[in-house]
Image 1 (cartoon, rainbow, N blue to C red):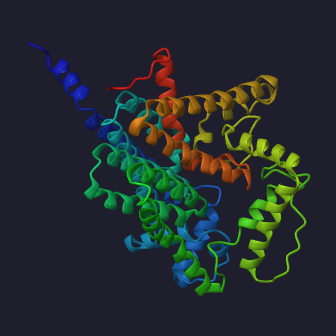
Image 2: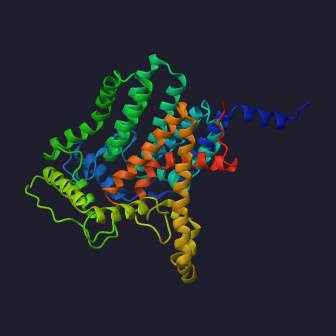
Image 3: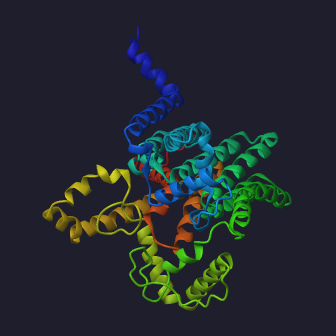
Length: 442
């Protein structure tokens, strides 16, 4: 007779969904314990102080507050946080991190649960562990910042699309389309740059599922739902301060990453393009600056290519070490990162900042990208729904990467797409461990 332990192991192997659920819940509970020991209930990410200032203005003045931070930065994240005050104003940040942590655990669980019903089943466990236990990505849910919600949203989107591709239930497609469009719209609400990925993903998915004659109809429906959310920001800003725009910082951000002497990152001491701004209207001035910077890129292809390289390097750079540029100084992981501790001594600083440290950093970037591309190639060659899954994940990644090329190189912008990159890297790692033989279940 088999022992109880053997029966338990067999049951667990037959039902990995339960195992994933226990892990997800366990990590969520651990975060609750951590958050209870954080002063104020949450850590601040790079723009955390600005978001909190916006929330305070909304509490004091209402949704049409004239606070500058709500116009300069997209007001979506502060507005969402403000909605959470229905559970209590004094502990709103605690409520926020509880929501973000629960969403991250659930979305990771939901995503791998859908992967289990595809031919990619053998990749599910590694992908789940890499995503759920990634220190920077997972701990970001305890910070005031949109990045964790964005990463969770991408997992939900790909999970829903995966579910639809397996079911192929025409009666449910419209419902799934509305779900995906609403999630994409909400992500665009908290960070407008994410709208590009939402539109591209919907197009790829609809093109796969519907005849070409029906694509425009379903895509139009998707856009109506998707664009509703950022449209509310435009309405709020126009009503509050007379600016018909989602935010007014795009031109400024792009200007920092451009110019003859710019490095492409925030640390560039000299940057910017000489632009002839002919209006005092903040929204129109921002649009003029955006057009001006884009013209500079077109007129200076050589310098643009160099900046694109730098920004790509910064986008994929490690969180610490000699090869980085960005706004992840408040990354909770850096508090316990071994490299941070080594860097505190003169000898350690020389080691990390010297040729050896730079070599390791460049290899980290190189192999990370190689694994990602290799993982995507495995899914592409698998064809069928697995190809679409890979293409959607790769599109989410590349859209943020390309947008970064025309703004600022910052490794913080990688956080929203980290779940997708870790998924593709998991596929690459697992395949390499199998000697290059894809782990596809027929």
